[in-house]
Length: 420
Image (cartoon, rainbow, N blue to C red; front, side, top):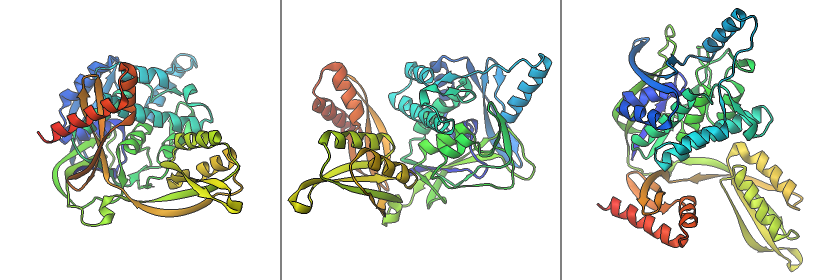
């Protein structure tokens, strides 16, 4: 299977990822066309730079002709302006999530790219909302909501799709250290929202005491990468280096992107092995309506899967076994939902390992709109392919069509494309 591996030994930011993509062969013109489609006041600039002995591609987003800069430099400039203008407060430049998603939805880009970009921004919003104890719709995206981050995130989604890989893996992330000044004041590195985004992802702090992983970079790698760890056995095809804004002494401030073919899968561990939590509760005195509501709430809160099984309980009473599959970091919150929403007096829990096929999406264009096809593969062999239900449901509702008709047509188009 063709994969991409992100070597984040110097962290990751949006511009570093774009630089690595261009350096690995993604056409810079594709990003320029994407920025034009977004219709925001931004342009892109490409240059070749040296980062402590490594030649790398630097991609800058220019907003109103001005280059983006690291956070501490931005806020140092704001402080200088504040002093110059007699302590006038710096003007915030940003947007709410709804306006950002409206810009993305209105752009002339593929539906799958829109979905990926929206997922990245939603991850940012959820992290900020949790850190500030507020609702996601009330979050004002200061730095990350500006045009430069919209460009970074949407171009990241476009570039990841252009790589045409079955999966993206990443190394543990070097987050840096020290403190950083942002719109809320001085924060520890990694910043609270960044660390929230990196929950469940391996990180470490090296010798560089600066912010190496930005919130935007964290959201991008969290959304696009399906696995974190050492570089897998692979045959390298191409390598790209994306430069960070700073040039550190004795440290190459670059993100390395390696694209190539993995070895054929010959054991279960290559399928993508992970440890998950399994939560269970027996229910025999609860309304089916509440069971259904609880299932929906668990899935919305991040459960990998939720299902029910009919069981017979003591005194021959019919009951329901409610089972939840969860990421380890979500175990406690999902257990809390079970205890709060159901009548159970206890929740059983255990850890299990599961092996999963590598997953990717390909899009087909039906007569009624674009549908993503979810593909499960092992090595270079596709094992399963199924149209995304939500895409088909939306089209069926919009065009008053039977759902099965949309799903059958989407799968037929995919198989025709695959078989030539």
